[in-house]
Image (tube, rainbow, N blue to C red):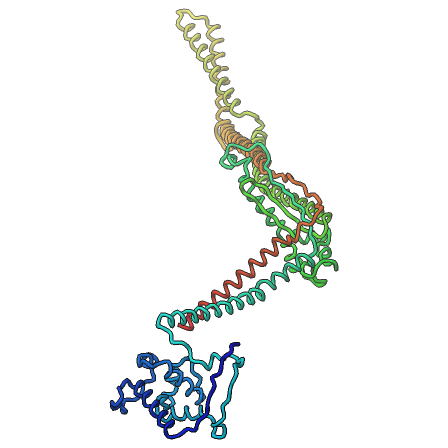
Amino acid sequence: MTTKPKAKKFHTDPGPKGKGTAEARADAISRIRRGTQPGAQADDDAPPSTDIEVIKREGLTGRQLRVARRLAQKNGLQAASDYDAVRLLRENGIDPFQRTNLLNLAANDQPDAGAQDEVKVQLPQTVARKTENLPGPELTPAQRREYEIGQIQKNIARRRRRKLFGLFARLAVFVMLPTLIVGYYFYRVATPMYASDSAFSILQADGAGASIGGLLSGTQYATAQDAVSTQDFLESKDALQRLEHDVGFSEIFKQDWIDPIQRLAPDATLEDAYKLYSRMITVGYDPSDGIIRMEVVAPSPEISVDISRRLISYAEDKINSLTELKREDQMREAMQGFEDAQNERRKAQEALIELQLQGAVLDPQNVIASLRGRIDQVEVQLQDKELERAALLDNLRPNQAKVDGVSRDIARLEAVLANLNAEMLDASAGENSLARLSVRIQMAQADLAARDMMLQTAMQHMETTRTEANRKVRYLTVSVNPVPSEEPSYPRKFENTILAFLLFAGIYLMISLTASVLREQVSS
């Protein structure tokens, strides 16, 4: 609030002289606005300009601008500046520097006739400053530019504050509020769960051979397939059904004191129980060291340890069944081959014995050889007798008695030789001859020898197969036994809350980026 001293006014009678003075002043103002000298004729045909820059270049004085501002206020025009008041008046068809307009404005400022002789003394009074009704100072281009830049900066700051407030509001609704809800659940609602950790590995029997597969014996790669099969079994519905039959897995998680998110519904199906089983049972296999690690989560530490031990026993039974099937398959084929070789050898042996019994001779070849030896011996004796008789006959006077004795010996040897030849002929000719029987016996003996070799090969193959089957025996060894936990392992309150915050923030960021890109595409 400022005080403005009011000047003393002496009211006199406005006469023709006062009127002429006002008209002269209006003419002077009009000439100044039009840029003409006194006595020069103004160009009334040129229309006044309504451009701010042109009005600024007209060289209007401060008094003219104040008169224009007062005239604009009188006509109800809201002007931002004095030059804007001149522009608004000209746009409305009012010349602010026309004589009649100035006279009307001056007439409104004159006092009434009844108080013209009175002298009023006005003291300073406190009045409210009305900046909107006062003409502003004339600004230079640099000052106006700084003023406009300041206005732009203020608008930018205002928009920035508004956008920042909107951003914080959206973050509070879409990120902070869900995070608080999730944190409240983990800290106040979620049922504490206890975890038991165990580790076991699958080993191969000792005594691997020198084959290519034996090079991997004793390493984690030798039992990698069995370890993967065991892991798949522990994560399957088969293991869940065995747990359901033994300990009632579903009933454990249907209790009322478990929070609704982790609790199974009373009418839960096997699929619902398997989903919960997949979350509560974690089985991992590390191929670098060949160890299977298992984590079981349950509402109490005792139940968690019991489930872990039962799952390990299930895995051990599964490993034993897998190796038993492999050994049975391999040994079945080897035993079948060995039995077939034994049967064939027995048949060959029976055929040889039958042939030997058929001719009542155990060794026909020896019989024929004996006959041939006897024939050779008789022929030698016969030749000797014939030589002896010839020697006796060479005498001039042979002894007839000796000659007759030798002749009778020769006859007896010839008879014996004939009988032996006949017997030899019977043994060598005909279907039932000893020669044919000897050939058949030799073939049977060769067949029996072949069957003996086949039997030995089958026996060796069976022993090798048994050795290989024993090498494929798998053993499950527990390296870390499950131990009851004294403190709950889940939920991890702080970590899960931070994870939820990051998740919601990421979703909000993706949606915001997508909306910004779509808005830019639509606007372009």
